[in-house]
Length: 522
Image: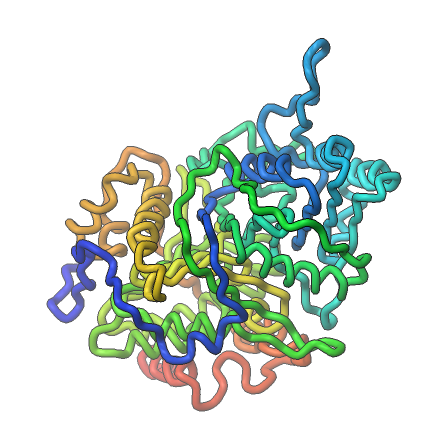
């Protein structure tokens, strides 16, 4: 790597403590649906932990479990033991989701379980033979209800991943209870436990969600209840409020007594107005950053996000921006839409990056890429954000999404900054294959996240590899630039170059593209 001049130096990581200043970027409050108190909250990283603690929490529910997801697969196992019960011993709860649900309602006489899944998922059912059997087995249980969500414009999807237990404990993030999600934080290159219900294995998968307890769970119940009713589900009866804790015994509490913000995306449909809180909050958080932005996202295809980053990178002293991202999108069509758009956007963002503060990295274990499905954003170790929304247009404007965030700059949240910083260190350590307690010294020694990632030495097979945009052919370029399959408005789906596409006239991306064209003699 070429030695940088003084003007190219990265911002220092040596600040000992996150800033604890009571300030908010202009406009942030207008981009949030609600703020609510959480008595406890924790970021859950990867599905081995999530599936296990979710089963523990569901065992404590007594009134209602509301599961809202993009997908559910009843064939998955929540825990690794996979035991039903042993003769002569008290019955143990089954680990298989399709068996655990009816077992739970049989053993909890006052409990109802409602599951809502995006309607397009019904087309996967023919390949999930035993799932039909599970749904038939559930039919006699009047306290189990499974509904498909089609309450959105054509071409949009229901993408929220929310679970609410007794209006007291909730989860919101990126993990679905479905096939292909289970993995450990080690992300071993070959792990026989990472097995599909069909019998085959799948590659490493990185994901995240947030568990919260308290008033904020009641707010997420409002979102889930509204979605359930609009999707055609039966009315949900009120139940007795619980004041005791449902927190899983094996999950450490990271945050206590914090205020949590909730932001949503929803397309205009029927009598619903469009909601773009998530997009506006992303832009506000990018504007707010002073020192750095650390983000994990499944996609990087949003014109508005890219232009907001360009605006910051053109400043005299821009923040460092580090994005952890999968090598390729999951599936051929997604690759044609998202991967090509990413290549075009990254080229333009780098053209604006005059201080070398922007980088995208793809996690690997050995020679195998780790798929990044997590949606996380950390700003200056003050803001921790996790949810279902990616850096793509669908998440900003088309699909139903829900994000949570903790802001240490809000009054009463001052104690959260140190925890947020520790979570950033933990995520970087996971991806770089180093011990978590080494991360503070490594960052201080190298001066920035990018320099640390570039030069860290480890015997671990896990590493972050810098993303370099590939050269695209003419067809790929036109597909990426048109936004026809990832539009900014549901009405523009399949409409090539609606409103000018990615490089619309007068935008920062258009200006960067012209600079690149002149530089390349095009």
